Image 1 (cartoon, rainbow, N blue to C red):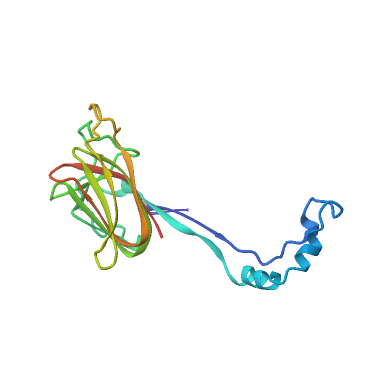
Image 2 (cartoon, rainbow, N blue to C red; image 1 turned 120 degrees about the vertical axis):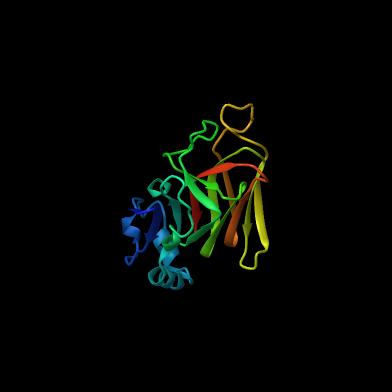
Length: 200
């Protein structure tokens, strides 16, 4: 489902009908499944759980940056989707060393070079982005009390048309329980972020 500003992917599975043995394409002579299921003491509990609960896959959100204007300061544009940015602007890179991964708009840390922060209004468990950087870059995830949960590192510059072993738009991700904030830090460097995604 696509809504203004993001791409939302959510799957919800729910069933109020109970599968029967007759629905299977196996012959009763080959498998005595009916008797095995009937004789299972925990079957009633399992059926109740399936009937009363909805099995849902976590929501994944990928921010649509194409609605942002070039050099627009990005802060609360995606607040309705649960994320607020700090020290962030939208740009359309004119320097070929910073190609986009998709579309024409990317995020960049500014006005302070080499730093960008995103805070989640409710905790997430996964964050990813495509990153092109002029220096080594660290993506860090923090919990509610600003404790460091996990980090991942882009080991060095990955500009286009350079001799870097890592191509531009390297996918970086962090995964942990109860992520409330992430930071991108390339000390005194410049970097761009594309296809910023997160999962609840």
